[in-house]
Amino acid sequence: RLGCDVVVNAATKYIGGHSDLMLGLIACSEKTYRLVKKSVAELGCPPGPDDCYLALRGFRTLGVRIKQHGESALKVAQWLESRDEVARVMHPALK
Image (cartoon, rainbow, N blue to C red; front, side):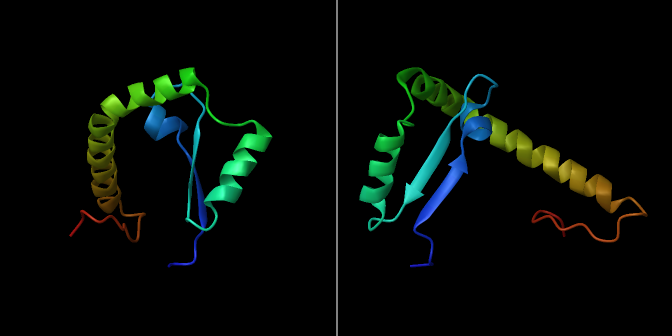
């Protein structure tokens, strides 16, 4: 609908939440699903059970981590606003 059939995203940091996992995500349209699935199978790059376990473990704290990211980002944006050498700060929570 919007012109994007395949999206590849790193899941190591946000999903994993630790430094013991390397993982990626692929989201695709219905029309490209079979080709993407075939490519993953042929390249031998599906995640293993340990990787999946670590990703599920990371999901448990994702909400807390994202909330903290948002609070920290707002504090940095507010600090940048107070700096004379910064001309403009764009952050959705700033007025």
